[in-house]
Image (cartoon, rainbow, N blue to C red; front, side, top):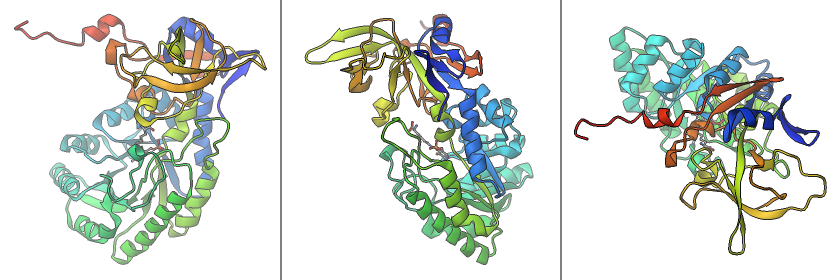
Length: 421
Ligand code: LLP
């Protein structure tokens, strides 16, 4: 459920017509709905009710300060994976004790930053990282709370580029070596082992892989406790998928996911963390774009938009499907025809959809890519010297630009010319 609906034949974001925002901001732009963000956050919160828990929003999915503030006001913690994300979370007012630091390659500098500013825990992914963490923390006279990310060797049944829980992936330590690595951690100064971390992938559309992974984590908790480790926190990662089409997909609901967590690890008395990103923000955002040309090709027609792969890379990178809908609702019974929907960037990969059935559109018409809130704006670039796509947030009948489009001068003047030129 989201708050991008047609009303009287026009697409609205909550109580604001999308076309009105487009007229003020220009296209393309990302548009987020506060009500949808909050709704999705609360679904998780309700799903984990009755367990001591913290939902650490995986801010890599969409990291605008306004989004972070909206979620932090709901009680969200943050899952960060870089010094930049840590700084963003702090700048949005999130206290260190609500920030979990994940990531496979934290540098000594990033570790120092988080230890200095405060951190809930580091999710450690390797022995060398643990040694650096121990050394840095000891030198600073601090004790870093840690979990160790275990790789449970579970098939997440998702796109290969976003699966992380198989033994061939770069993430975590093999669960088979967990006892050895936990023993090593316990012996190191400057760190305190407090729990276990696991994250098996993103856009999971079945619960079974979670069940397999969490069963292994539950078993490991008992084993490590027997070894003398005080395992009191479980970070169960993110990854719950969303429907990208409104017709034929029904990924599991947060409520069922919550029940699965309770069933598998509830008896252990641990504090539970989860790190959802996509499910919170994915369907809370759309990308609005304008048709520049309708072009007739050899045996196929193209809709050429002003949005491109630099603004939304998911179709090019993961063959991802996004619903693309006209901002003016087609009259019932309007005939549809197949189009290749493309951007203006100079490569064939700049294709959003092939042979997609669309109602008749003409230059100047607006379309919206649905489910674009997660991994949309954050993965945008200025390829082809197209200024970074702006972001807008709606709240009821209000809207605000939360990241303006850079001017061409701003974009160009970031370059500096060496003396010899
Ligand atoms: N925790 C960790 C350690 C992660 O690596 C991720 C996502 C999450 C949580 C959040 O997962 P989510 O709930 O959003 O599925 N760019 C790709 C997705 C990459 C996911 C990376 N890690 C895409 O556009 O599909």
